[in-house]
Length: 165
Image (cartoon, rainbow, N blue to C red):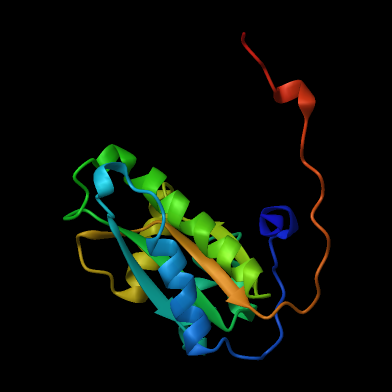
């Protein structure tokens, strides 16, 4: 479980491409996430094309890291698979976290860029990727080999813990 305490958001990457087998392992980790009623309401777009990475880097004011990434994964909610649509974002959040943890395990850098629920950002990503109507972009995860690595800060705050006996 050390990977949980080592993971940081990496926003700068070197130019080395991510190997296909590592990309597949990231997606396997995503699809291993828990899902309400096992609905698995996800589709994943894997982007390596530099021009698309540059365009996705403009989809949000916070998407700059995508411009430096050698790979991005865009998890999408598939309305046709969402038996419990109100839990789809929860399911996709778990999938995103699994990608981040697997990236850390593989010594890759990753940064989760939130897209949903901001309509303008969702629409921008949908337009860039030409998403079909039933898919809603949820996030962009920028990935690459980190240009540098910093230690994770300790975020544990005992004041936020409330034990009831």
